[in-house]
Image 1 (cartoon, rainbow, N blue to C red):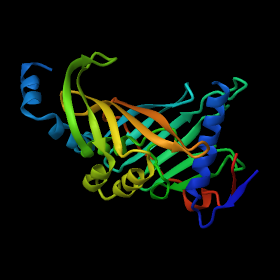
Image 2: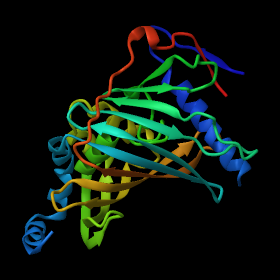
Image 3: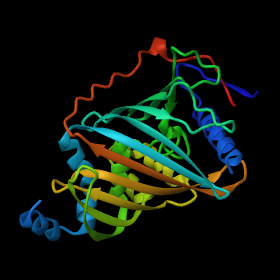
Image 4: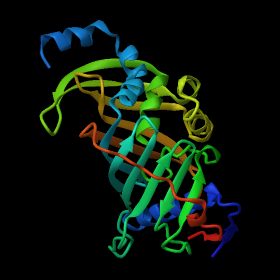
Amino acid sequence: MAERQRQHGRADGTVVVAALMAGLWTTATACSGGAAAESAQAATTPLETLHHAADILREAGSSRTRTSMEMATGGTRVTISGTGVYDFTRQRGRLKVRLPQDPAGRTADHPITELLSPGALFMKNRGAGVPSDKWVRIDTATISDGNLVTGGATDPYTAAEVLRGAEQATYVGATSGDDGTRLHHYRGTADLTKAAQAASPTTRPSLTAAAKGFASAQVPFDAYLDDKGRIRKLRHRFSFVNGREQSPVSVASTTLLYDFGTPANVRLPPKKDIYAGRIAED
């Protein structure tokens, strides 16, 4: 079992990413409003609407979120799901992420708890030799995907900021959400390099890393916004290179946002609770 040293309360992101993704690929291989609102919608171009979607989320304050990440390789799909809350003002979130079943059909007894924050991802119940009461910290600017796929979920605000790089988009039409809310469906492609240039200072390093690390900086997306311009559903399709086989891997990340205004008081762990030992690579 290969091991690497983590020092000064900061995890080697490559090790943690490799360990998490290795487990996933092992599994994959083994499992082989009214008229007025419509007028306002029509008065704004799709690109203008999408470029400002992240700003509207900040104004909304907070929400509950559900996430889903599907990875496809060799004709097999693996899905990771998560639930939690997110504070768009402070750009902090808390998720419970469940990994898929292992080759024997077993699911992890406890989900991984993830804390999202500008520049850092904290993971608890990570396994791989980490004590159950300790957190692993990953500097998101140091990993090749900028934490768009690393934790098995895309940070909701970062996902919205990807839309700042939208180069082309069309308005597909109106549809209904699961709760009956009218949603406006947009489809297009965003460029991660342009998104990084237009992103907030806190998100820019992560998007810059992703623009360089993915197999393609072009990200197809489907975005569903309500009459207030708030993102309710956002689906990105990323492409990165599988380090084991050096072949492109397709990742579809879906973020659902609902119950806006739900309290999301996310506290980051103190330094004493951050694991400073060795991370075993599965």
